[in-house]
Image 1 (cartoon, helix red, strand yellow):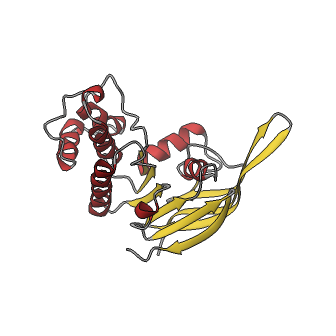
Image 2 (cartoon, helix red, strand yellow; image 1 turned 135 degrees about the vertical axis):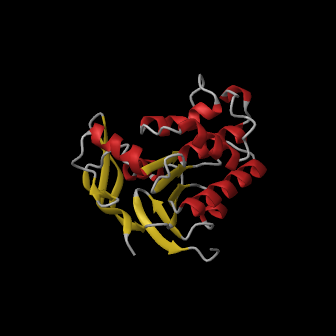
Length: 229
């Protein structure tokens, strides 16, 4: 199977005063195309830092990150941004919608950045897929948390990304709303053939993915195949 993401000998440290804090150490794994993959671990274990490096939002101090066959370490910030726009989708815990834009405008942004001529039509279709076809002209402040996360999902899939990174996608939602968002996330992921990488503290959510990477103290504690898939 072809790897879409390969992490080799990854290390990340932060300096605080005279002290060095190692956040990630000796991280090695790969994710194949179309796979669903979870990163779990206690708070402060390095999960979100690892996700940011995998997605090209941050750089490691050593080791390599290869995304869709491209080694990201040597890319400039602009080149990494272009790579993300072309290949990557994001879903965050706090939605990160633009408050001054309507739902449909938020979904259309990635398409417009790529120069898609039918951006608004495609955005409308994606909102319909997440059950918000009648809410396109509402601003984020006029939507519930669950509705905002569904808009964020539609936006994340707008460019039909090869890989989608989701950081605690249900963290700010009640259980019932979170369940619906997770259903939509997996439905869209399967329909569009995207590789899904989740960071979560929710083991029930992690078990819905094919593989689970557990991090403790910045190191890989285990990499197991979920028995629930």
